[in-house]
Amino acid sequence: MQPSISVTRRFLFYVLFASLFLLLFTCSDLLRPRSRPLVPQTVLMFVLPNKTSDDSFRARDRTKFPHSDPFPFSSSIVVNDRRGRSEKDIREASSKGCDLDRSLLKVYMYDLPPEFHFGSLGWKGKTDQTWPDIAEMDRIPTYPGGLNLQHSVEYWLTLDLLASNVPIVARPCTVVRVTNSSSADVFFVPFFSSLSYNRHSKPQGKGKASKNRILQDELVRYLMGREEWHRGGGKDHVIVAHHPNSMLQARRKLGSAMFLLADFGRYPSKIANLKKDIIAPYRHVVRSVGNDSATFDERPILAYFQGAINRKDGGKIRRKLYYLLKDEKDVHFSYGSVRENGIRSSGQGMASSKFCLNIAGDTPSSNRLFDAIVSHCVPIVISDDIELPFEDILDYSDFCIFVRPSDAVKKGFLLDLLRGIKRTEWTKMWERLKQIAHHFEYQYPSKQGDSVQMIWEEVARKIPYVRLSLNKEKRLHRSQFVKQSK
Image (cartoon, rainbow, N blue to C red; front, side, top):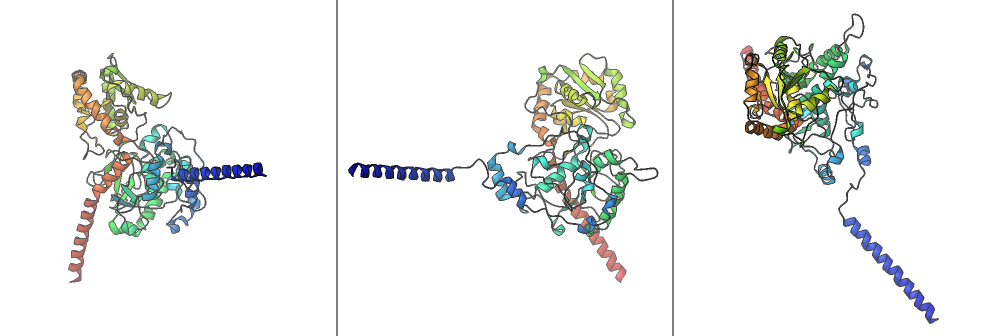
């Protein structure tokens, strides 16, 4: 009997020891910081509400604006993958979110039907679904690549506003979307006007208006019927019309709004001006060099230009410069387009050049300036009427050289100027380019100091002028009312 009792005691000891070990292991695992959120993201996305409004507008005859078929577009657009952020950042964003007290700007965004925004990218939501699920990267409709990308400003701003209501998307709290229009600082109109111009400007049939024209007419009718528009005369509304030919039919009727533009080249001063409007940077189309930036001696090309040479209006100077510079051995001045790897070729050329020529074309500005900035190639700006984004904050003379067109076409003037700039002076501008290049990046999720956040800050700085203007109008309106009543 004694051996049997001994075996039983030993067995019970092993069982007790194993149980204690498992208990301690479980406790330590629970206390250990986790690399993944306790609640799966898919579950969080399932319970997040998809709020929509403006039901009366969506209930109108939607057969006039059928969802477009999916378009064959480039997937070259790069957005930040969530893997680029730590799990700690995600957890902090989930717990804090972007409340009204922490935000710089409160924005009410109209829930326009998808035809005005993501529907033009081929996105089709469920019945009465206005917005795509922007928390999952693979569900976000991508913007067309190539030169379409340069005018994609409204796409990035719309994504950022949507993200402000999704806590798990880590982004700055500069701006937050509000659902109560009475608490908004400004009103954002999510119309992808540049894409609409690029894709829908051709008439749909003989004698019929283009879809772009129809959308503009419908937008004007909608805004004119809103109390929010009449309350401030449209002055507190933000409309993106970055392509110089976008909103051609509607711009005069909506001219009291705050426009986000590439420049003022095709606008009368009464419709667009720096007092009320904002110059937004183009989205660069070449790759950013990032930390892989060549130094002065590693850039064999003195001056670089590749693009359309025969332009009209202020762009006629391009042809004159072409004949002055085309035979210089250390200058690259040639025709180029997006075809046959033209964008990649331009990016490589700019990253190998000391100076990049930004010459006026059909309009005073082009995306070439911003391609040069992210290539850390010192821009040579040759344009009399150019307006620059964020110039109330950035001193462009720190990293750009400005040349009058009348001087640039003088024989030998431009080459003498560039060859006279020594390594030390160039390096100082190059270092500054590396410091400010992030201000000209559009991305999702947005980051502090990038183009999206800089634009929102510009909008916020316009608010005092808007309020001053509206209060003055109320004062004048009140005095006229009193005078008439006597």
